[in-house]
Image (cartoon, rainbow, N blue to C red; front, side, top):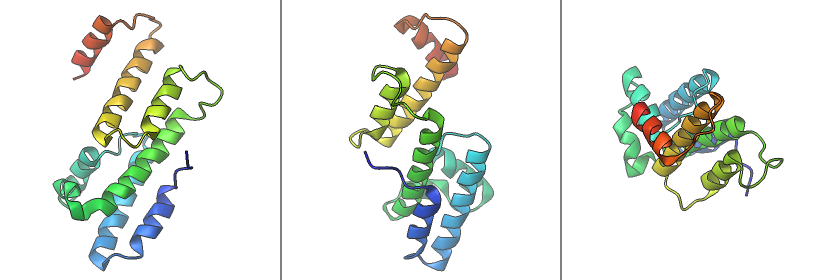
Length: 151
């Protein structure tokens, strides 16, 4: 697996071939992602970032789904990879069956769509919080109930 590029490097490479208007929006998106990352946020999905971009009046967040917004999705993907890398840290010292190692392996696969990866991250975080309470009950019934409570 290749080492993910830092979001600053991705931004620099994307800015080179853009119009002034698009450069401004890319820089605003990058700044927003940097703020979210500094605040401990780990969700850099199109929907989550798009909602905040719309609220701030930078651009219509739904426009991030358009074909022409691929550069914005590339930037968001770089931020997501950066956050995942920091959040999950190094999994080389744990067995391949450890939940963190399994999640890293699944997130690295290119055949899994972004919305599924977001669901995997959420599910992993839910299980991590449940385990931190001291319980070892991770049955389907218990996890299903927790998912329903969380929404």
